[in-house]
Image (cartoon, rainbow, N blue to C red; front, side, top):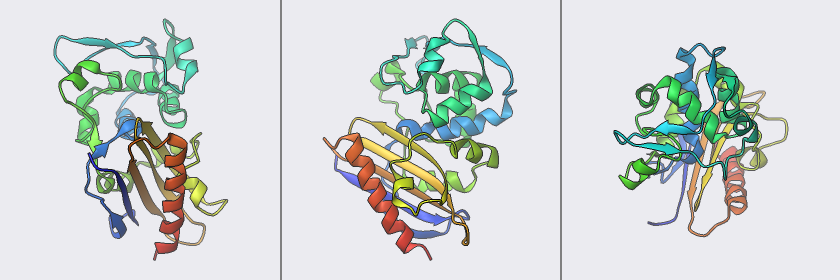
Length: 235
């Protein structure tokens, strides 16, 4: 599979300002947590749910257990066997990129509700039976840009608390209001954001990288470079 740096820059109305490989499907990684957060708006977010690491697979009759290794959210793992509110789990899924938190929210929304928000997101994190069956979450930069154009204000507010800021935010002028969500897995590093300059119209920027053998830190450095170019290219 070829290396790619896919970019979509445009207005929140869907107008394209700059694109590069914008229709290339790329594994979603943790970007999929945003449509999960959007689907969760239909839930009672102040309701407690049981924290557990095992889930029904998308493959009928199969279950899988999520691996704690690689999860950036130790707090949710510390609560296994206890309860936590969906609101807090949703927050952790975005600002800490919590995998267990995301699956717990997605279990409550149902996968079909997430797919209704974004058809390209069709499975939970760590669903090995689905992986073995060739079922993955993959979408293009343009499709993520379209999603950002209809992002509810409540979810954008959560994204403003993002912990990981070494991609798009690092390439834009200090003090710029940015609500972003990152994603990374082997050979993939992504970031997408709604950017609200103080004296201009807001815009969306999506940068997806699929670069064999490139470490995550280098991937984010490249995303920051693209963000600087995007800032110069905006109308």
